[in-house]
Image (cartoon, rainbow, N blue to C red; front, side, top):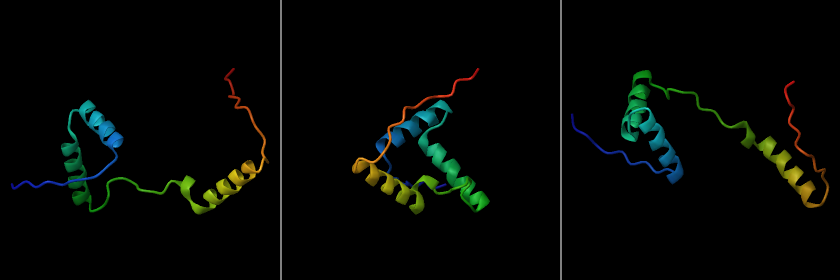
Length: 87
């Protein structure tokens, strides 16, 4: 079977962490990507759920912008983080 090359750009730290994971489970990144591609073709779908992180939705970002604006003009309360301890 003829081979070809797929070139992918990604953050250097992400690649390093992915390479480390792959090594830990006994494969390299090329094998992992091939598994992903073959599974995608077999199932005719991305083989895992993809969803947006709700933190980044526009409504939440608007609340965050208003909160930051309030803090910028000196309106806000400093709270100390207190973790609940198990009895």
